[in-house]
Length: 236
Figure 1 (cartoon, rainbow, N blue to C red):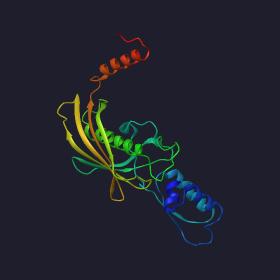
Figure 2 (tube, rainbow, N blue to C red):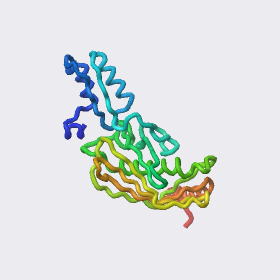
Figure 3 (spheres, helix red, strand yellow):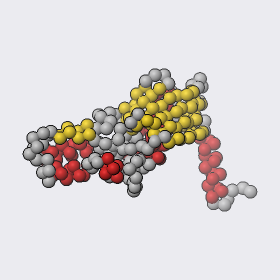
């Protein structure tokens, strides 16, 4: 809403209201709509139905087009609304690109938004989903029978510009990777979110993918230690 007001755009609800009240009747021209982030196929179908009821033609161009979302198993998200990456593509051995995709019901957007730009945590989460998707889809497929555990050692984000709810590209560069052993695959990557030809956020990540069982024991021990400390039953 704030972004739409700032740039003079029409919100989804405003357009539906205008259609329902005949504001575009009698123009004799098709309506061309350039949709921002948050407008999906379900919303487009609703717009088209509203236009057809008034005998109007409407052409809606989605921000990311008819692109495919990255699978939930690749970004570790159970709800489709929370997937921020679509149209993942490998450009070279070390370079990958994808579209940023925002949904109105995304977990990071459902709370109050009081700025024209999108909050920085969206960029951080999109970067996280990007490297997870790349690792799962392009580096761990050699061992499809294993479900790897991905551990972040260090993650740093620099913000270069505001990110707005319109089209944006997510680019990943693999800086280093060692897949010589299947039990532990260390990797360093840089993820850049670009919009309007400028970097909005750049995230560097040092991580490792561990085969099942390698870190399970340590995680359980640490969990028990944390619970014992919280309940005051830890050994002195």
